[in-house]
Picture 1 (cartoon, one colour):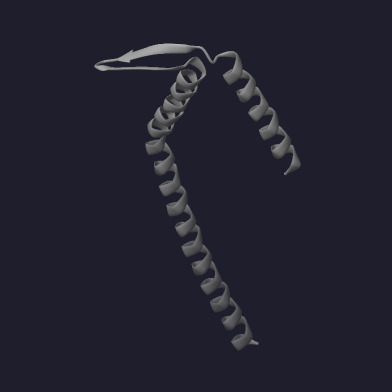
Picture 2 (cartoon, rainbow, N blue to C red; picture 1 turned 180 degrees about the horizontal axis):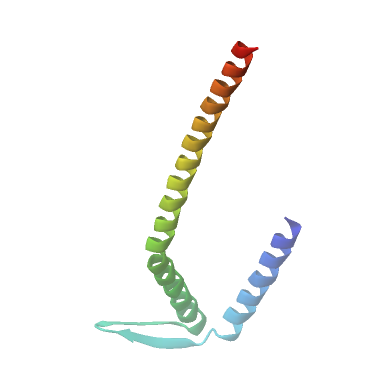
Length: 98
């Protein structure tokens, strides 16, 4: 846990240094919109947009794997139940034959 706190603090300091060094305003134009912001904000927003896009692209595959895992776990539970029933039948027949 302490490792993650230290890592988060280091990343926070790096972000702060980046923002301070890249505070100059830049004009951003996209289609009909235009605004001015610091270079750091523009870069960070671009990174966030990329992360969201990657998440959305990977979502169908992740959902498919989750469904497959759920189905396999359900099948395992069914097979374990059948195995326990068979063990009870075998155990019951051995005790009645003795």
